[in-house]
Length: 272
Image (cartoon, rainbow, N blue to C red; front, side, top):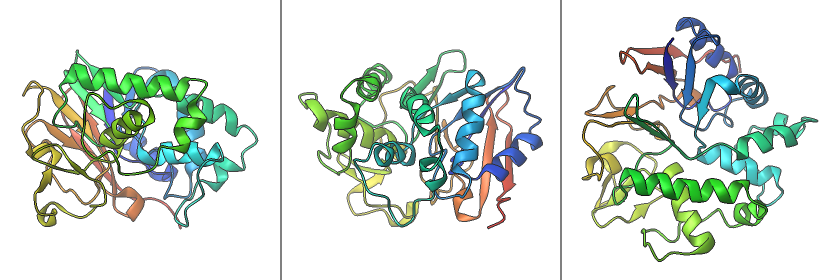
């Protein structure tokens, strides 16, 4: 039995299946951890989502910003973007079933056996593990609750940009989502800069990659994340495991075996 963490798939179904063949994934014995953004950008979003749905007892999935954007579009509270490629899911006769399942997925997963924490974007520097777990559960409850459509309506936006325990309602939920699914660089006082998407060398003045700031977490805890394809880090980089290697941009899809930290990378296999 092995557990494999896989980077941002983003609708690259052929590449996913090729990677699973390369690592000899056996759904009878093995498990998959997925860092989010499983759909959008690539042209096989429906195939990816159907495959993961059928495999749901063997996977652990945390939601990414593209997954949440899809849910908002599917709920008719956000417009399609020119770059969106999940039309195949929107046209699928059983879309509601897939949406209902996707809404059940968390923003954060921690496994004490592996002492490993997985989110899509990383860990906000002003949160310890217990705080992050509690806040992620708040958003999960919103997504699963009766007012989930109202929450998806107000999901978009960069404000508030700094955590305050006194935040309430949807502002509170929006910040939690942004920190766990969109964060890349953070100021020393905890302010998010959510428009920056480039490499590590050109961060805005006064901001650092979140993982270069002091974190309120045990140094031995492994942090597994994706989201930042322009962030090229060795695996591991201290206790950080950045698994988004730009598959949706024609580069690679990466898998990490948690038991021994062996890494596999395969080139994009899509035909378009």
